[in-house]
Length: 455
Image (cartoon, rainbow, N blue to C red; front, side, top):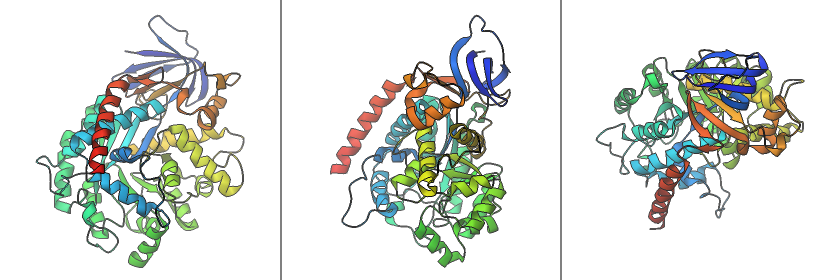
């Protein structure tokens, strides 16, 4: 049983000194405070829970930096999609596994301990099924297992190009399922999942654009007790089209017709009116915020001030994976609010550290969205833990909450020292244990994809 000893650790009761954490079978067995270090303990200076990443499209890591040239007309989310589609149509199962492994290494090094993979690249490039329908999902799980990140797999149901059950576009052919094929895919994924290793299966109706109301009802039945994630209100055009088709804004329609509750994560929820904001906060669902991607795509700014004031739950995800960092997502979230409100520490509670307030929110919200018992240093919780570099120059003279604020608003990823996911130590001295091997395979894959793209 590994035992970690921290000079300072953030427990549910606050910062404590001389904390011993005993790990057994991937979970925290005991937490002792005011406990002297014992022989064999692994020593650390500063310890905290490691958060979960609640929204990722792993294959999109391959497109990072490739959609930053302005076209003849204004670039938007809708023009960015064309670059994403081009890569989606090229990638083989081996490519997806290599890219996902690299991404998950980067997530772990940034301080994330688990990820909800919103997985919709299902089929052969021509749109037909693999011999094993869950081939691509299996590659996602293989990559996660290889690098040791906890995973909640969310197979995506995607059937239409826009509202009203419109026929899909040719570029979307690798994503598409009907209800029968999706049920089969979900069952195959269920057989692949290793629940005894902390893996979780949920479902992800892609969006109200891609799923009709009747299909959504069927998918919710297939979900059972698992998490349900859906893109909602990311774009103004999406809101306008939803009103025209369903006579309601996306979040309002979901709240009124889909029984949104604690199982749900509404990804983005960027464009809500006051009533939607209030009712989503009351629902117990999680708003899945992806501030870096939302900024990169020009989506808009989530109304965090009102939502948080009303007690809304939220977590953060890296979505298109253009950049990876717990600190980067939270910094972008808060700074966008500061620019919008022309105020400071908007996401904080009065008198509280902004960094700690946001981290406590994403520890809770991320764990809920993934269906994972994590986000706290407490007996019974998953041993998802991170430690910080006490010797970093920026931390001189700082302690406790000031360290969290320095992580979020100053140092970022380099402050992360070690990370455990489900009790497995996967990052030491800021480096993933398989960093070099994974990076070499990723580089080979990207060179080959680049050659294909040039043809």
